Length: 398
Image (cartoon, rainbow, N blue to C red; front, top):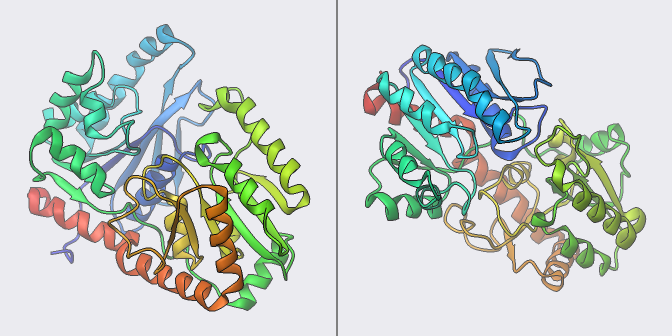
């Protein structure tokens, strides 16, 4: 069935697209770009806050549309609907499949309804538990009942982990519309490299050739658990360099502008605790290169849309991954210690785990190798698109 040429038009809808950096937006962009590379007509729609980005663009075969959105206050947001809703309406007419990434997109319910009104297939994917899982959406004050009405009409609910699937079942009583799968990684970009390539990349990135590199990827915010990481790494007795790839200051038109003080404080704390052993790199487009030259990856968040891009990408690059136990971490990957290490998140536990990986090189290599195999065999974009395409064809999309 997957050998059939898929000739339907797909619209991806996300709150952000690059160069703005948000996990769900980046994954929507990457997956849409992959599908468009398979010869499918794909458009990516997002919001253009205050008009700072180009309204239209083209990334290889992927078409990008950004609808103007003034998010200064409630009045300007309501005014923006006069631009956004007609855009949703017209794009719902023009496309055959509408794929909405997250419940934090203004008036996302309407593009789902427009899609169903014109007989299109509509797919919704939650991004973070306790924010836009099904139970949270239908229990929201004022709009919860409307959300339930809209979500009930979905063709497919894309659940990225068992916790999201359970949330759907709690509300609607069954899993008939649930498509459960990790969100996928482009394994042609994220993959393990040989020692010679690592050395060459370190030279290119101006990094020491012979030091142990620890890396984290994500905004420098409290939710990511950086304070405990700083404390744990300060206890290490071996030489290392800690790379933090992610914004630690954003411009005034950024959606995280209110966290600038928090980010600045965290970055200053990291520098105070770790001195020259930490480097804050800011946002990078070549995240894959920094992952490929690193020895271990740490994610210490207390809340994520698991599995987040950073874990999937680090595993794909064959890097041993330390992750704090959060809802959804179990279920897609094998047991603790086989391809990821799960920690409690406190600094003592993190220190012990990092020490184990540093001093037991055979164990470190084993976990990294098995992690890359898991991603390649279970979570590549190629496999995800094959499964999703077949599901759409089964539902009458051929």
